[in-house]
Length: 212
Image (cartoon, rainbow, N blue to C red; front, top):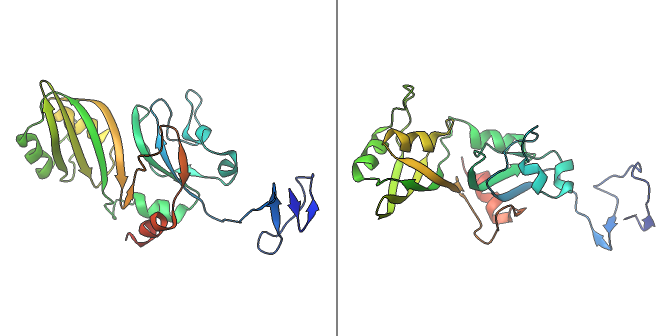
């Protein structure tokens, strides 16, 4: 690492990221106050910054991002995979998670059992869970049905605990695999393997910032 042309071996050296030129292996390091990362979260890791029992999503990202204080925006269950946004921008996270904003999230589920148009109508009306919790109206698209298994997409505007699984269970079926595809305008990059992540593109970030 060099700072203004001088090799630096001491991590305690004070730098001004706005005025000092910092190079790593000859490449200029751009200072970013906020970072925005898309992850294809795998099963078996928790959407948290720390956990005593399980690996967390922060264990899967570049340590440079970890040092910037990133955190997952919302949670995916340990056995759910797919799109997860990580950032250190608390204001954006609040906007995306605020119940008042009703940001739509799309999930794809493999279901044990045959989902029907009657189930879709129940979702549209608003499912009442077994504990009496009332869910907002949601959209259920039945993509395919084969023997005793269905592939469906569910559009939610809220995020209650285990909501998709509980809504499907209220229809007498069981979710056996669950993937999040979108969060607002942000769509999962299908080229990312499970566990991989990348910074958001300028277009993706702009779409999130404009999503009011």
